[in-house]
Length: 311
Ligand SMILES: *Cc1c(COP(=O)(O)O)cnc(C)c1O
Image 1: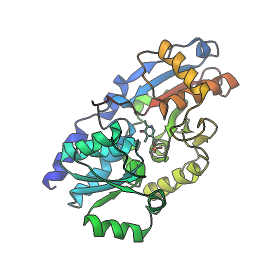
Image 2: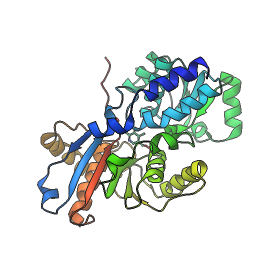
Image 3: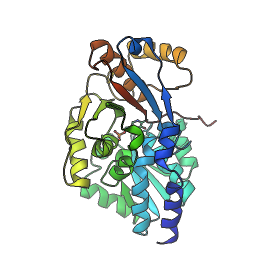
Image 4: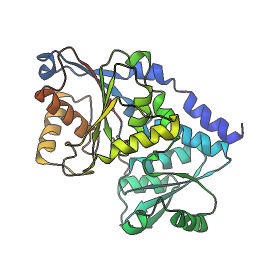
């Protein structure tokens, strides 16, 4: 192993995910659940790391190991202006000694928002591209153009979701999670769901709540990632596409009210409107509709997205 590989693996291996998970479960006492015979717990992987939060930690683990193995000290990745992935990648780069380049969708707007300001202050070089160019992010011509601009780099796709994202997510389920019948999580690119579904126990059903409008594409995306990593895909997951609340990072009056009630009822479980609120909203909506049979045990994964804002 080279020096960088040692640094990266020491950083990730010092966390025992199985032990962490057991210590990060929080019950969700709620009359709406008790009256229907449902038990639910929240898994706070948002607490995995203050900056490399939640599922981004899981997805970056083997991406960074692979970059280091290939001897690449420069990471290039993609995201929108509010991307948790850009934030986490910038933080990981600073902490572990990678140069980072962020290709950001849209124009640079001053002052930078807190996500981009944090990324830039962590040393990430921000490169803004038009929405039209951003859509070319998978084309080899565009990637060649980026190589001409930035030289050699290890490419991590948007959201960190690629074949290397899958094994990190597979490490989360274990004996501790065997008691759950349903596992819910918010879904953006499907990378996290792909790994969790591959590692789930046979009796478990995974449910990804799409936070994007038109989330039906996620079925194919999850299967594609599973096949890329494992050579097969699983049938144990569903995507809920009706809870995007007008689209990515958007909200509705109903979601706003839900969040207000939530903050009153569960002050110790902070949520935000892009990911976690949409998952919890979807969960309670489906409880009301009778989706979960009496006796169900449900695990809700709090994937992160909370920020300690920097002034
Ligand atoms: C990025 C992100 C997601 C989406 O994960 P995917 O693997 O892209 O589906 C979910 N929750 C939070 C908090 C995120 O930051």
